[in-house]
Image (tube, rainbow, N blue to C red; front, side):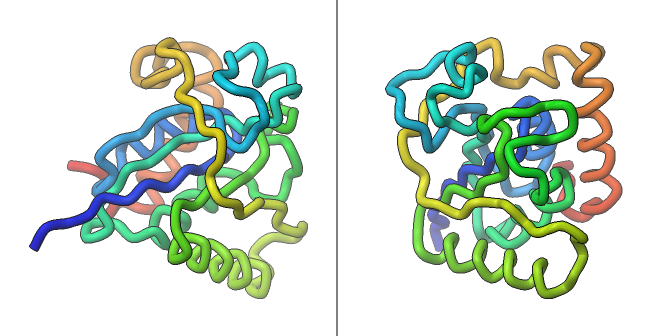
Amino acid sequence: MSTSLQTLTLGGGCFWCTEAVYVRVKGVVDVESGYSNGHTSSPTYEQVCSGNTGHAEVVKLVYDPQIISTRELLQIFFVIHDPTTLNAQGHDHGTQYRSGIYFQNQEQQQVAQAMLAELTQSGVYTQPIVTEVLPQTNYWSAEDAHQDYFEQHPHQGYCMAVAAPKVAKFRKTFARLVRD
């Protein structure tokens, strides 16, 4: 039986941090840092950081749903970032750091909306969840310097202070989903 790979795009703050986690997830076959859901064609990092393009920093995940489900990918997502801070993650502020789930199909949309409803009802967060759930639009790959950034610069200050703890939290919380 052949498997159809799926694509899901997530905005959880700085794409360096989000990418650093998802490259370690069993069943994720490709992770690409990029920019999504803005209004400018072919934006640069500097343009996105200005906040004028409307894009979010995102990671585009290609995954095998027979190994990892959309729900599991989203469970990881909600553990490694704060979905209650509007346009911010930690010290990173601006619309490019917004929390977003950018789906490719109706099933992904339904899973995301159901998960948001469950999390809201559970009261696990003391503040309202501000994660947007929208179809992926106007996606652009980030420049080569931003791909595999954590892997190439693990001792860089930001990576040590922000990305490394997210990777550690993922490994601890989702040990069964860590790639061998």
